[in-house]
Length: 219
Ligand code: E4P
Figure 1 (cartoon, rainbow, N blue to C red):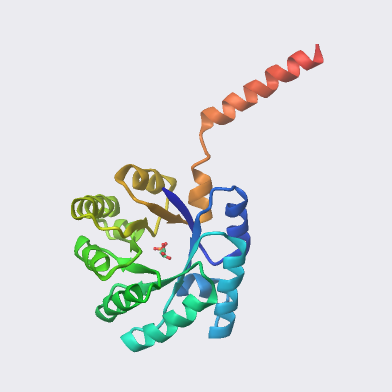
Figure 2 (figure 1 turned 90 degrees about the vertical axis):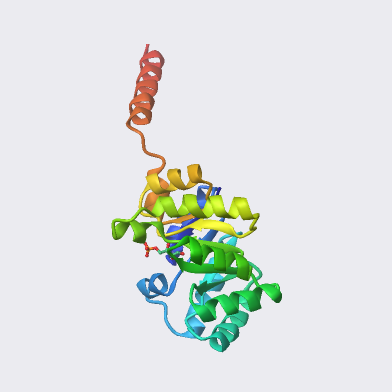
């Protein structure tokens, strides 16, 4: 399973990258805004900075909601760097745009996916990645992980090649469950990725090893 970090914050991207396990980055307009990045030029420069930091797929989202606008934006984004994956929302014009990009060899990530039917459409249109938002589904007391499981079953049964990118991850548990259920990729905030490290028995065990080592080296 690939690990992407879900942020536009360069120092967090760096920290995750230094672990040596980072395979890519996802961003969205809200994450860009959180970093105070605005305007086409500034946003594009920021994507290039991210591409130069991480050797992996970098999702860059279109703002347009109509087919023509998405095509213009997506082509510009794809030209920024070979690792850019154009992120397109799961709406009618988005499906058309994904098919268009797919026919032209431009890679896409279909975002804002909340149902198995939407995931089927994304795969049929030729999306390289589909992003089911597990955390936002949990937020409304449905089961985000159930969606990952359903999409995984459908894609296996149908032989679709679209990669399942579990998004809107909120906890380390979401990451573990995504792995169990067959997600190809998770995208998570740094906090959730680092949360995988934690276990009290590791801390207790390490403290004991170091204390025993210290005793012998003093005697
Ligand atoms: C996916 O690519 C999105 O950027 C992201 O995972 C959304 O997460 P959120 O629900 O925490 O905003």
